[in-house]
Image (cartoon, rainbow over all chains, first blue to last red; front, side, top):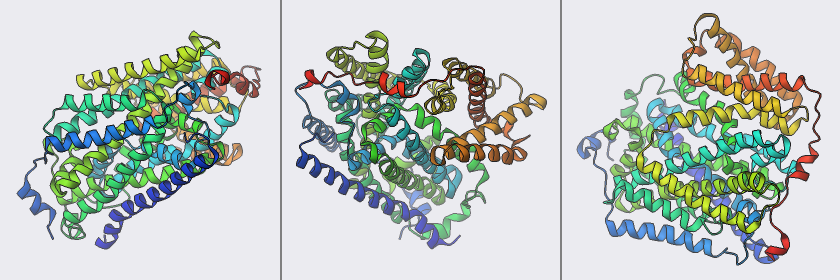
Length: 43
Length: 557
């Protein structure tokens, strides 16, 4: 099997981890902003 | 560029040890930080519903983060790496993908639970409203055993990690993790678990995103494939490995619905997230879990390719060994925090789950019988957390063999899937049908799993037919969750008929898989048959009327 393809197989997962983490972090910041604005408890 | 095998030969198999002051500083920062975070949400007046389910309207970000952090535990890394080491290229996928699908496939049913009982605290509470005490206690009992086992496994992972990478020993690690997790969870319960999960997730996923490429390039990068692929068998070198599917993927796939239904940590998050955000929350957590666990599982595959031999032949040593060999001391500290973060986020969820079950299902429904005092209830929850932590520490320290308990809990969860799901969609399912189906499924599971009857000839064929029906039940329920009754039924029939030619005279060689499938089919057949013998037609709207909040709003103001 092609070595470059296998390299991509190894590296695709940390890339997805970073993207997922970014999405959740932005959403958490938005949750905090909404809670501050409305005065409702965060959790 | 270092080529892995040569480098390994030079390094032998010695674990890197962090300095004691470094370890103390890392643990102080981690547990001190989470404790301080939990103090920011401390309330002067106790609210038992918040202690169990937060606001019931938690936002998308915190919900997705807590679901991911809870479902990724230390064992996920080790087991995924073991799968990669044993089965090669497809191994990490056969662990991580099916674990991720547990999160995905539960959300359609989660929306149903929320619609029926918006103020529910546990799934067992819904079963109490639907059927009464028997079915409730089956669910609650299996949840309690499952969560205590999970606590023990996480504390054991902490002990092992501390023993390997620091000058401290196993008992120190178990104690530090137990006391650390309890300290920040005790006061605010589930709310603290959700809040701190985000910080733990950042530590865990941030570390994973760094460690995977660093280990890969340090071990030789693309070059390892040119030299090392010759070490793999034909199946290990292929993404299609029948052995990996039958030994790892299929049993895990069968457990997808069982673990999701049987685990209170998932149910608790279903009840906590804002109802319209259940779908995006669970889809995000599915992707995040899969990426993290498959990515770390790939380290096991790399270990196989470079020819690493696990210390003492123990596959749980693969990841710490790879980290010790290929990471700088600073990154080993990051790795240490990654594992501590993953096990702590799951352990705090287990504590919150256990306290909810004892508060709701033991005290609220069976001792106070609908007249629960919120203050007593809160005390019950906190005492439960302390007792559960003590049990987790004690079991981890004694290094108990939990395999038998784990097998039975898994079987019980498989046996309850159809009765639980059908009970919230159809008024025809009776309490008698629920109880007899679960009990008969567990009995037949035990006969198959432990080979109490010889699975040869006619008997073997009968159980293979039952197991094949089990395949239809699993796939049919999954299709039903997303596409409704007609598609679910069609998938059930097609899967059962379609798989039959391949499973007869074949499945008997795979007892783990066959016994799990038997539990699904027997519980389904008995539940349907016994229900059809009755004329009962339960009004499902009664569930929402019977499942109510415990807290008196006037008391919490």
